[in-house]
View 1: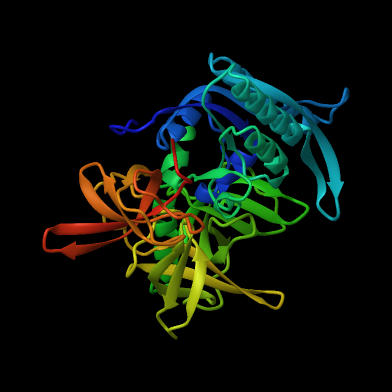
View 2 (view 1 turned 90 degrees about the vertical axis):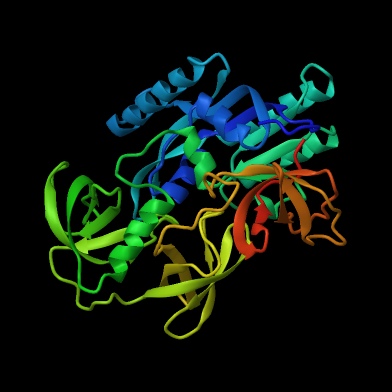
Length: 429
């Protein structure tokens, strides 16, 4: 994606912490998936990068005599590594996979060495670019703080490095430049998931289920189970996932008609239904509230007002997925002595914003005014259209700077529609 008169696209050398990115996909879509080499190239093209090579940190080695489960996981990782190296741009940083017994959780797999290998590769690339053996920027797909020392080493060599993730990296700008990966961009990395809907569209399906006037019964298919915990995991053909607490053994692939009894966030920020063969004790469900979006407070946090009592609360939300004034469903629960408010999803599809085919996929904009202070709004150009841009909160935008941005509002004006967008990147180029 080039912009006239700009330095884009920029050659990029990419390091991917594969398990970390798989977790990011789960945060935004409810299920983890690996990104591919071509997928990484497509994601980063939305930010003005021309990917040259991609190094994936993957745990491909293990003990001499692994358990059956560990051997199966290693086989999956080996298959993934083979897909990476089948692409001429793909490289593998081979970490180690081990099993550890957690307190009350049984055996679980852990990666070893992957973060260190990723940090070492960042440092190698920084040294090569500084020495003139390569030219361009480094992009690291990971939210892991353990990589920060390598970013700071690159900065000491005056080599630009961007940390890229679906959240959090924008709060660490003292260590590196950053890219926020909205769901529309991240989805370019792995293809279509099972189910009719995904991402914000699936959140909308779940939100409407929870707002139904009468209790809801749906047909689910068993996808797995945790027998020790007495939990069965299921999926609906919409893509919605659910958990059923039952002591009975259920076979994978079996189908059951079950009642929706609530929603939980035990496995991350994406909503998962709770279901039962018994009807819920109360309907509407306790803790489920309809709310109105007041405004975006940051690229990944929105302020909402609960319709019933007017209470205002901040919820995490996927970049670009909501508009002020839109109705959403939120969930409230007590966690210890804290109140936890979480977004389930919008009630209705988001109104399209001019200039964005997908509001959750960034576009490159160019600032045309200089901000009077750090974080102050500036005018910017999206193609031939002038918009208002909220730059990074700790940055004083300068005319001519380029940013990736997603829309956070639009208003009717005599000349048409005026768009307000928020930067989802540090300055680019």
